[in-house]
Length: 175
Image 1 (tube, rainbow, N blue to C red):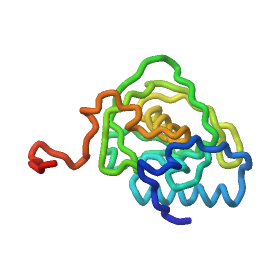
Image 2 (cartoon, rainbow, N blue to C red; image 1 turned 180 degrees about the vertical axis):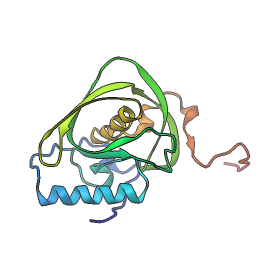
Image 3 (cartoon, rainbow, N blue to C red; image 1 turned 60 degrees about the vertical axis):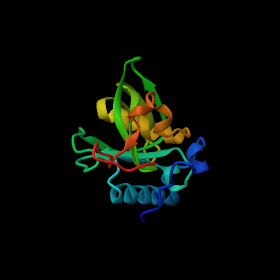
């Protein structure tokens, strides 16, 4: 397995709808998952979608034990989710700070559903069916957006919250 380069905002593949996986438990799928896991771990990500490493398939991984990019985040079990379908459990949304490995150095406040059900498959084609809330729900929505060609800045409602992560009030640099 290998750490792969992550495509950045502006790459056309990140704006495409990814194709569903049709064959499970194959060497190619396991190789892709290994590359995704290695890449996510190397970059301290909370999740990664296959399109972010140049593979237009409906595959996401996510999970958080402890993460320097999300020091206050609740734990999210490591999950491989293939061909996901998300169903919000209510209209209730909450804004929260998000970043993305494809949009490095920036963060913004993004509205997400607070509770949802997700259904998909694991690498062997077995069904995963979970109901989640909080940070877990946010991470799943963020990663699954990548499969639909959506990056989190497209969901920001108030662009005054979109900023560099290293910005401070002491920053006196000019345009």
